[in-house]
Structure formats: C-alpha cells, structure tokens
Image (cartoon, rainbow, N blue to C red):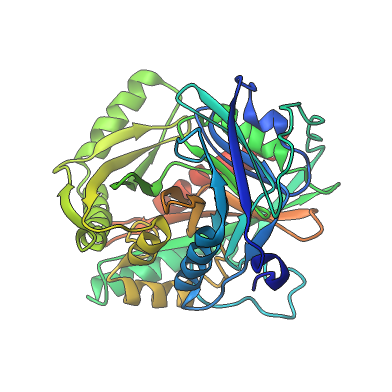
Length: 425
C-alpha cells in the first residue's frame, strides 16, 4: 500500500554538510521519528513524504520496484556524497508473508514498511549532514535538540503467546523433529508483553539502548524498535558485507570468568554446528551475486554487555550492479533466524511458536537512491501497540540436536534483557 498522490510527484532531495550536531537521538521529535545508529554515527529522520506497505510473498520485489521507480524520478542534489546522504528511505520488512488477523486492533503493525522522511540528519566518520526531501525546494532546518523524551514511569511484564513455563516443552518438540531427521536446525522465538501506565515515548528506550549497546545498531521504524547485533547486509559501492551471529552464551559480569566462557563457546560443538549452518546459508545466498567472496574458516567471539556470540563477517564483491533490497530477497530468512533447510524450518516455526513474528527477525535499516544501504536483522526488538500502552518483546534461539530446553530458555531471557531493561526507568 502506498500513497498514489505523493508517488506521482518527483521528489527533490537536497543534502548539505553541517557542523557536528552532537548526539543525533537528541534531535528526534516524539512523532514520526526514525533511527538507525551505531556507535553514535548513523541516521535519524522524521516526517514522511512517501511510503509503501508491501505485503505477501512478493513484498521484497514490490518494495524494490517501488523504490527504484521513486529514485529514478527524483532530483537529488547531494554534494556530501557519503553513504546515507541524498535520498534515503527507512525500511522494516516482515519475517513472514502472512498478514495479521484483521480482527486484531493491532492488525497491520507487523506489515513491511518503507518510509521516505522529510528531514534526515546523519553523521559518518566525522562528516555530518542534513537532508530535506519533498516535492519542492525547502529550507534546511537547524540542528536543534527536541524536547527530552518522557521516561517510562512503570512497565509490567507478562508472558506472551506461550507461557515461559511451557517454552522448554516447545524446544523439546523441536529437538525431537531434528533427531528424527526432518531438519538440521530451527530458530524458535518467544514474546513477552510489556504494559505501560502512559503511552510509550519510543525515544526513551532508544536513548538507553544506544548508550548501553553502542556496538549494536539501534533502530526505529514505525513502532518497531531495538538494538540488533547482526548486520544482515551492507552494500556500499559494490562491496557487500554480512555479519552472521549464531551460538550464544550469557555473560556473568566477571571478566576472568567471561573469558573462560568465551573460550568454551569457541570450542562448543553445539554452538559451532549452529553457527556453521548460519554462515553457510548466507554465503550460499550471496554467492550468485558476487564475483569474489571471503568466508573465514573460523568464527570470532563478539562480546556484548549481556551476552557473547560466535560471529563471522562474510564479504564479497558484487558481480553486476545490484541494490540492497534485491540482496535481502536472496538472504531471507537465513539459518540464523529461520533454520536449515529453510522451508522445513519455517513450517515448523509456524507450527510451534504460536505467534505472528511480524517484523521481528526481518530486515531493518535504510536504503539510498543509489541502491546502497544497511540492513540489520530485527533482533533484540519490540513492537509498540497502536495506543502506545503496550509492546511485544521478542527473543529467539537456534535449536540443534545437542540443544537443552532449559538452557535455551535461559538464553532467550538473556536476549530479552536489553529491551526489557531499556523499558524501565
């Protein structure tokens, strides 16, 4: 779904370098705010001049075709010439192709979104800029801090689609299917509901996530927010990068003990098996698009404040001109969020999870008029309800034959912790 009246007009995008505006999140207004930040750099934007809500199995192709048409007709004045300047759209695409039940008051929240904002402020490697986008020439706004976000006064948490006490049984059933030879790996997720006394100002958890997890990509697109550690695809001037995470262990806060845990994670046959499936799925998906690739033989251990992951950075050189949105179609869903074989794993997810993932575990990020862009996987995330008084928090775990149900429950709780903590004062 898009806006035909707006889409029929060619857009004008104008970028200009500016002095460093300071923390980008402090510029965001409370309404129509978008964010994609990593270590303080990135993009924030607000307003909307064009948007589309593609649904169904063809949502990636629909989104890509709409964006290419919009970009081809746009007038872009971009002397800044850095990734993220010029015409951009913020995007968040659903994990699955099923639409939510229309009787649900929150129906449609899980649908894919591409939104072209009116104003974007960005910073990358010491260069700061502002972009304005519209159907005519507009004045460039000043970088003025917005009113501070309202803190979360209280948040009450409760089980979501499946009670926490029942989730190990769901994992056990998945292990049975794996042991039967039906599949090699499946990623199962669970949700937790947070309820608030007052409508949530999303800028509050965004500030807290950005401060606590600077090595992650903090994001917000139309009520879907979080801080993901996993870069699904970055396309920049012909070079494609994907960071694959699979295999997790919780940190204790004791540095010496955590180093020992990191060493055990790097040797864990269960976690290495899970990681190998994920790396292979990404490498296979990108191979047909690349003329050369680098796939490291062994993962490294990525240290985050709450957990540690096995990680591998897969890189390649694109064989022919391509767009980030097109690569997303080839990559979704990877074994890191779906399983192996993919079709069997997705069917098992639909059977066992008992919930609609919506945009959880789908791609989230931004795309430029050149086709370049950055998309993470929507992990460590939550979806805000229409009235702002509740949110669904999500976390998932990769299940293989050596998985233990209680350990997977503990891992899911560790992965819920970043957003859960960000929703408290």
